[in-house]
Length: 227
Image (cartoon, rainbow, N blue to C red; front, side, top):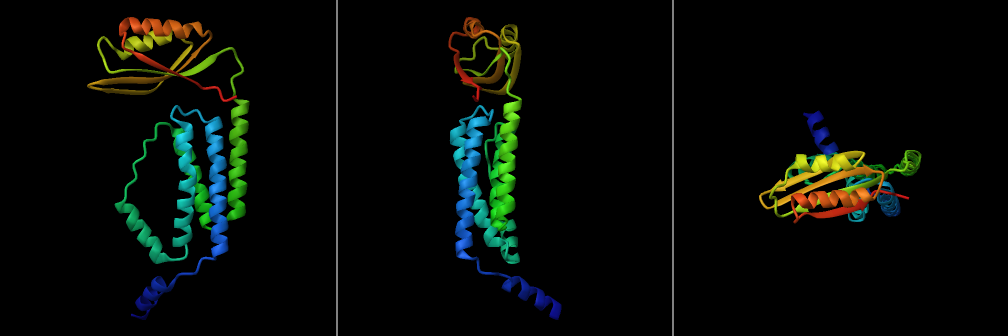
């Protein structure tokens, strides 16, 4: 009986006051590191989504994670309550690329490290990761004569449209074709691809051949160059 009472007392009393200055410093550091991560993401990521809009979430995510960890780390009762709360609240995020998920985890990592008051380890780890990302992008940057674009084809009139015909036209005019996303509903057709070619004239040829199939097609070209 005494052990049960001692355990209950441990749960209800295990709590320490957070040092306010340290908490504020960690919060500022979380925002600063997440801001740097957002700059790296905008500059070096290959995602086809709006990188600037998506990266705006990093700062808030890192700070919120840091606050949660800082609050619950000193209390077993709060930690158990957090588990219960997360089992009720389910988060839905439209992640289109694995790279986006990696950067989200990196932002969460910042919050976890600073929330646990591990400033030096967190700062050193984040800057090493940033250096590795930048060096990897620089070393793997294609210096050949090939051009790369994210090419999106969309329309609200699906007449005569067939994904096999589209991929054939792309394959005939490009050295490489990689389908990134395909969406089709009753009133919408959209396909996003990553294409590689040697001459920009090919882009015009692709556009003309596709419009012969369906004149209502609209096109979006996004340059993937980061330099």
